[in-house]
Amino acid sequence: MKVVVDGEEKDMWALWYDDDTDEVVFIDQRKLPHRFEIYRAKDYSAVAFAIKDMVVRGAPAIGAAAAFGMAQAMVQGRKFEEVAKIIAATRPTANDLFFAIDFMRQSMAKGKEPTTAADEFVRGIVDRCRRIGENGAPLIEDGMRILTHCNAGALATVDYGTALAPMRVAHKQGKKIFVFVDETRPRLQGAKLTAWELRMEGIDHALIADNAAGHYMRTGEIDLVITGTDRVTASGDFANKIGTYEKAVVARANDIPFYVAAPISTFDFSIKSGSEIPIEERGPEEVLVVEGNSIAPEGTPVRNPAFDVTPGEYVKAFITEDGVFPPDGLKKMEW
Ligand code: MRU
Image 1: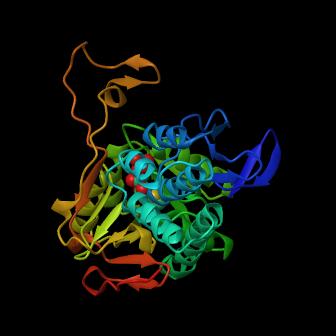
Image 2 (image 1 turned 30 degrees about the horizontal axis):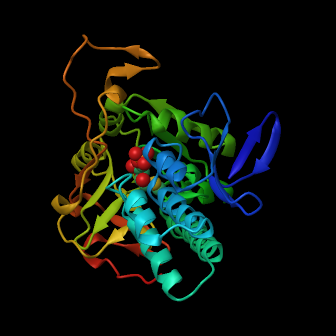
């Protein structure tokens, strides 16, 4: 992804493995957009903290962090299953986390060198997201106005993105596109991260309050919705950032096509119904505290689900590295 730091343009990944120090290195997503800081994880517990505290977030990027974290733990002489248990307990919803740990488990069983295996996994994710961009770009016509929720860009996937990848490619192809960016309460990934990525890429966009999306869909200003996802079931039900379900329902009510972009690592064919997806509940402070200030009476009870489930019937198609599939025609892809 293109990043401008102190006036200098760089091409960077959201996270990588430093072979010299055996540290997992992250762009600290908690600090963007106003500060560009790097977080260096010295061991698996720091990697687990980075995932849980959302230094790194977004399903494929969480998977990449897990792969690098497992490799680092192996280099540092830890026991695979002990570390896997701790990393797997960080965030429950993203299938990529468990897919990555499993990939590393199988690689170790085959006798692969840990950092080589993790590197292969992460390069695989990056390449798959690039292909998602190529497969999704034809769905975007010149002049289209697209709504997206949360951040499913390069920060969320190491590079390119899932939902943002087709937009990146369409933009590079010279199509004039406009992106409506949901702010995405409570963590504001849209406002902080998607708006930052689109600015770096020079893609036209406007930030909107979450509750403005329905208005723009009804008034005819949105032609297409594309989101990412944390887990897709065999029936096409999917979990994504809280608020996605209501965007899908309003899109259907207004005949606006709703697409979901994801690589194979996000698909969980072991379950059918979306109600089987574990939904992470996060702490009350994310809802109660905005930019350091409490916004509700002290002691106000809070519910804070990080994701919701949208039934597959609301999805026009899934954009994957292997093609574009309707929810009732999902193909079991191979890694
Ligand atoms: O809580 P987050 O920021 O990890 O949630 C991220 C999302 O909901 C993304 O849309 C999803 O992980 C897909 S990322 C390509």
